[in-house]
Image (cartoon, rainbow, N blue to C red; front, top):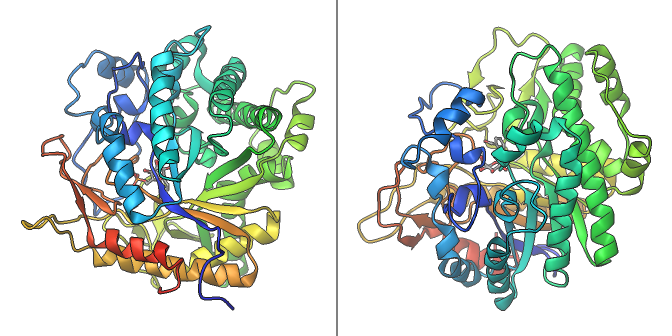
Amino acid sequence: MTNTFPEDFLWGGAIAACQAEGAWNEGGKSLTIPDIMKYEVIDRSKPTKQKIINRETIEAARNDEDPTYYPKRRGIDFYRTYKEDIALFYEMGFSVFRLSISWARVFPNGDDAEPNEEALHYYDQVIEECLKYGIEPLVTISHFDMPIVLIDKFGGWYNRKLVDLYVNYAEVLFKRYKGKVKYWITFNEINMSIKAGPKTLGILNEGQANYEEMLFQGLHHQYVAAALSTKLAHEIDPDNQIGCMVAYFTTYAHTCAPEDVLAMQEDDQLRNLMYLDIQAKGYYSLFAKKYMRDNHIELKMEKNDLELLKTYTADFIGFSYYMSMVSSANAENLELTAANVTNVLKNPHLEASDWGWQIDPKGLRYTLNHLYDRYEKPLFILENGIGALDKLNDDGTVHDEYRIAYLAEHFKQMREAINDGVDLFGYTMWGPIDIISSGTSEMKKRYGFIYVDQDDLGNGTKKRYRKDSFYWFKDVIATNGGKL
Ligand code: P53
């Protein structure tokens, strides 16, 4: 039993371009789905509704130049503040920083013959800034920022053409950042597609009878794109390590009734495992095949596809972990907790965040063991953290003891899992600096160690403040978890 983490454990934080950079219409960048996601005041006591993304909402937003109600257009201005912000990450002792690159910056027309040099120049500087401090940049190639031009021209990921466009984009990045970036994630939370098809696959729901089939087809194209990119990444630099990623929706049976346990097993398959099986084991699982058969989903494949998936699997498994869920065969009359994306049954043993996400540190140990046992590939926690209503005091302090408590309990369970024998090699806390929420577009849903003085509509000084958790995390890293 050890008290500290492995010596070379990577500690850090993660952000996404579309929630942090801002500069939505600068540097040649074209419009993306997050740029059109409108801010609405939400009632946090109720389950959040999925934002509707269709032709009308896209057109309305396209014609609306005013960024006020589109918070992701401004982000936290990371486009300009990256130096100051990365310096703060360094001060905390980060050894890794997960960022994403905006496809719509690099290929504003989607199918440009050459990448946009201005965009690459920007990312050169961000990456250099990390390297200057000895921080390992970990790059997500596509993080929830579908370029709208790819929907207009090709209909999103339903069209196989996107495989070529993505692989070309990935190749540009692998070549440009050879020897500088070693860790890559092909798609952020690829399993969100089924719940959020327009957002992650760019496949609009226009009442097509086979809409679900279209989503599975789009996903198939993403798996193929990921496999081809993994192949290329290894050819360009054998040191490259390519990760797949899901949002892990750990779930428990509501009771020990066998039908609830079966419901749990099915939910785990449907929400999590079938995506990982393809990318980590290299084939469509029995469950996935049966699900597709039962739901009349027939995939169109090219003759090498299955071979490609089998040959070029991910080097490591990345996942986000925020909460856990409950599965029941008779869910109709059970109480729900507010949570976006999927509405979740209440677990009486767990507390929930201000946004209804049920806090479950032990579930992280369970999940780490579950994944390592199943795949025997190195694991990386790419996101974890708590969105909360923080208060900035007049003296510039933020007392976020709830965040410290949340993280401390999760870290202890990570250590338990490592002692169980799990190969966990890194952790990036979600939103180490406050950024715009993906699900709700709020600024007030804050995850950071660093407070950004900006409200939901963009008012504020944008000044950065160190929260109490900033100093705490610094100490965790300095002692490599020894003082938890
Ligand atoms: P926000 C839902 C459930 C789990 C993960 O989410 C999720 C979501 C999306 O709402 O997405 C990831 O900002 C995602 C990040 C996102 C983060 O979780 O809605 O990869 O982009 O910001 C937290 O609180």
